[in-house]
Amino acid sequence: MANSPVLTIDNLQVAIEDKQILQGVNLTVRGGEVHAIMGPNGTGKSTLASALMGHPKYSVIGGSASLDGEDLLAMSVDERARQGLFLAMQYPSEVSGVSNANFMRMALNSRLGEGNEIPVLKFHRELQKQMKTLSMDASFSERYLNEGFSGGEKKRNEILQMTILKPRIAILDEIDSGLDIDALRIVADGVNSLRSPDFGVLVITHYQRLLDYITPDHVHVMMQGRIVRSGGQELAKELEARGYDWIKEELGIIDDETVSAGM
Image (cartoon, rainbow, N blue to C red; front, side):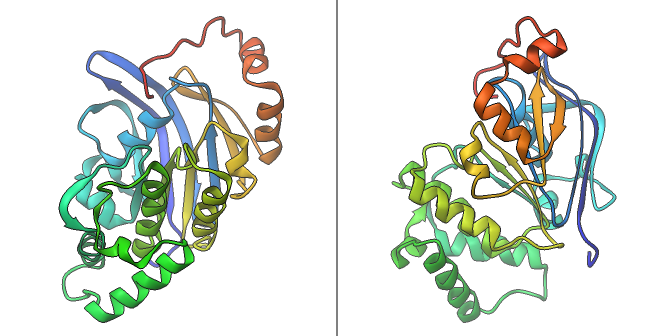
């Protein structure tokens, strides 16, 4: 796994129960690149993130996805994480009885593999260093995972996990929602600190403001379950200024109706 990572999505089609959400998504994310996916509510952005991570609610009914040439869809959720795929969730779950520190150390040791476990003291030094970078109080390490955290604290905690695990490809699903401008800057700094040829990022967002802090190499617009337009950072700025109706008009989309709440 020494080579630069590559996430390849080819004609991916995904359904929830009997309703097809993704209609054929094509996308390649390489190490060193930041891709942003934008689009109206209900177009399949979060469905893409959940399907790639292996959420059982989502059924892949066509197409393929691979990470470093390995069939991602054939892997369990744990295997995808060990392979280096990371998802920062829009709504992180609370886990009572498991401290932040213990959760992250177990996750990191699982990623490193048997025989390569990180020593306890070395792990805690790195954890405290990253928490300081993200302006998180040291007490967060011993609090139960996300329990009693504010929305902004949960999002910051997701970025903390990412900086500790150092994945090969990270998917950030609306990591900016609910953040004030100071928290947004801190979260973005955490993402930017990992930028390298060994790390690729797929950012899912509604808003241009996040992309003022995490500069994308590629911006994609998703509508009706597929990517309909791609460009550079200037595309995000145009969307901020003009909205999405001009793209709908160009494509002849009369009503880009919501496919499912929260998608």
